[in-house]
Length: 333
Ligand code: KG4
Ligand code: ZN
Image 1 (tube, rainbow, N blue to C red):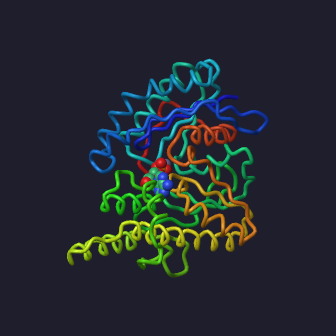
Image 2 (tube, rainbow, N blue to C red):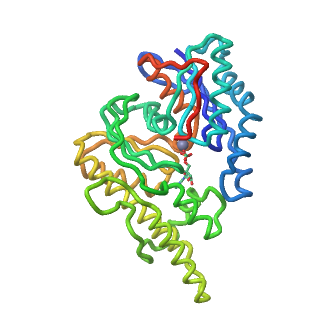
Image 3 (cartoon, rainbow, N blue to C red):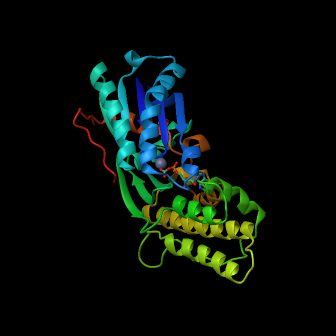
């Protein structure tokens, strides 16, 4: 069967066609129209602009995904769309477009949760994980730990109590003059600095919890920068990037190890935009090796927002009988 995935929860308008054959998934097309250049002018995503840009792009992006997959809507067996969480004006564009396509062509419509879709990107790997698996979703909007009982059942074990990891990367990147979103630039710059130069608090907060907190870490980085400036000194940006990245990665790696111990899972999925971070990938791989667990991480192209992951999540939900009708709505969380 072929699934058309549609994603518009934040700043990427995306559509993809995924084919499921004998239980394995293959990406036939994966189109992403990024709005990053537009939002960069403002230093972050402007919700109203995002919604408008989705409206302008959605039809073209869906056409391109079908064309690239060399098929038409007649070949599509299900339409999967992100209906939560995200920016409401952005989500509504994808949801309404998907509803129109599904209704007018009599195609089953399957609503998908965006963070679960990030985790389902692992199902697109040539060697996909077999549930149950532990999972870390680390993105611009979310940082959470799950137990994946299947590709449709995710039990949340912990989450961030304030900022998400990507948000923290982006905020610190912005104050040191890196263009939005700064996560990827911080990744690179961290190689040029000394990770022991500055001491930052761990996002793995103390206590009997697997939760995270990134706001103290972010504030500590901003304070270090400001107090250096007040003294008329310029902070070494590479050292800051390296020390900040190291604090984030070791905090998440600590949680990965605790999660593997607690759940006794033998597989760990790392997904979401921040899973593209090379330091984080290495830190989680080291934990998995130490714990005798297998790490599953999507290629960089499937870490950030895309619709192939939505189609993958939609496939499993379709198999579970999950359907939506034209009353489907979007939800911010
Ligand atoms: O998953 P995603 O595309 O959107 C959300 O669902 O939030 O994640 C975007 C986030 C941004 O904060 C971006 O800076 C971050 O992922 N990101 C990275 C890297 N590449 C993207 N953060 C750290 N290192 C990277 N290489
Ligand atoms: Zn995302």
